[in-house]
Length: 355
Ligand SMILES: [Fe+2]
Ligand SMILES: [Fe+2]
Image 1 (cartoon, rainbow, N blue to C red):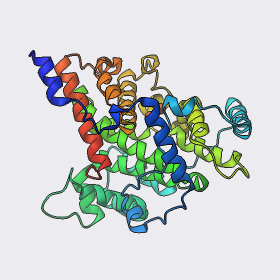
Image 2: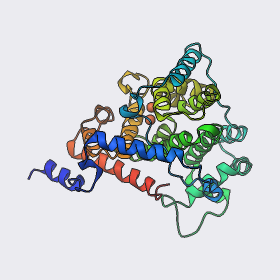
Image 3: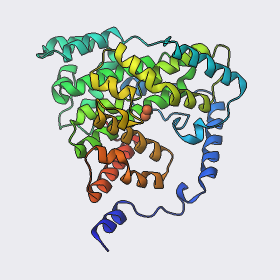
């Protein structure tokens, strides 16, 4: 057995007969759809406030919204009308961009200064309970934890470093903005789940690609930022419609999220590479300003999508992805190891072990 074949065998053992992978794809999708429909009819679970405060993830009740199976479902007429109204608004530049929370603005301004007064930064963070709790959670997660617990914001800042503090602030801003889409909270939960999963996968992929890991995390976290603005607009436009289908939300996301992402990243005055990636990552080769960061976002997105769909063959196919070539990972053994490392970080996140 050659080296490549051995690496493949070790990293990607054949799926077990009990796994979903042995079923015809269409059957699986139908099953997952009916599970989603059943979940959608169930009463809303009471939000666990302790979990919400610490940022622990609740499993979204809708599945991935980016798959071809979801976005190609034929829409009924009220949803077609809503899609038309939304496209009219977006085409004429009338997007609703959520405001970046003032506490986030203040804290980010300090993090971005060349020299930071830690005491002032700590005070700014302490004024925002969401940022403070997320920061403490990160500082005491498996990624950073030492024998002693970080018990204060100051200790947490010192432990994780300024780049990670910045990432926490952006994450809290996203979470807070998603909270505005109350009528669509099942979709907001999936957007948040995806952002976190893609961020962690992107951080792992960054190690192989020679990209700063925290920068990679931020690219993953914010690459689909536009979905937040779109959820707010969907909520406004749905008026008295009781519920939206994953097909409509998925279609809106696929059609408009990069355009909305660029507008939102500009409005939030995000770094140039984030503006660029949020505006163009699916066709990453078309992103001439930041092609590597765009390829990173695209690859991390695909890893999350394939694993969320339990699409083992789709995950294996990522080894031949042009995004890996764009990231400069050419050696075949390195490609297999990179995809497997991405899977490991995704699974750690889904099981609640990731940070
Ligand atoms: Fe995207
Ligand atoms: Fe994405």
